[in-house]
Length: 392
Image 1 (cartoon, rainbow, N blue to C red):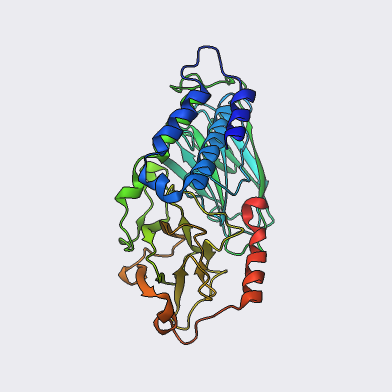
Image 2 (image 1 turned 30 degrees about the vertical axis):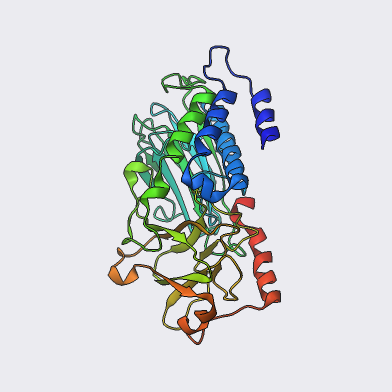
């Protein structure tokens, strides 16, 4: 990782007045993480990937903040080390805004399950921000294959127009997929329509690349790991829109911890949501490589038992079940479930359950109709994961 970070520091020149430098900030993060329990649990290789991902994401936001007069949707195609437990079923693309501006977002809707635009009052990655508004293209009647145009801010106009709150700082486009193999991505762009824009948002405090990286580190290294229950789920709840959560989504999170000779069985009812998914994260709140590991499942990818329940097995070795949640080389981390586009809020019966069972007794804890995979079938399942949406 040192060579990667040295390249970034040397090729990304900072203003002479910046203090501390980007290199100083990276060194501070490395020292801080070296003593944190989540970093120790994740191991040095995962920690290095995480720091590199944090640097890359912060520099992307910094670059966008220099060009508010000509905004664009940034996009990371990286699979490793991305902060914030990104969902492998999503393509996230964000553009920075000024609440005083006027914008047009236009393109063609793909066939993926959901397409939402979130208006936030903070820059992504370096802050969570409040969810100021959510625009659901499905609710606007925009279907797969159709062209669309959405106007944000300025005077009301014909068509799909939305007021832009003065505190708006970013728009996050979230494309959600249930079936990686058949659904197609959307294509779209953003234009700033008013011409009085400053190219740099000088109103944002701490606006150097080093400042952005330090802010991102404070956000994602906030001690979440110690606050989440181990091998037990709290009730699902609506996403916190005051902290950047998607309005209309419900979710639940726990920590998992594997004991020697045991696996964890996660059971949850299949719902009527337009999207339902489960994923793992390492102790640093980073999603394992979703191509090499079956670390996530949508309902289209998972086997559903005859009683309408989805049962997943978290195990550090292949237990043979189709719904194997593979944590890679992690024996502990996060497990996160999401529901989007629910026709009605979840009820108590929809809450997931988690149970530790001996690996040797796993079959006795699963229904007779459980789908099991041989080596060739597992290889075929993994091959399909090369079509992860962020590679679209």
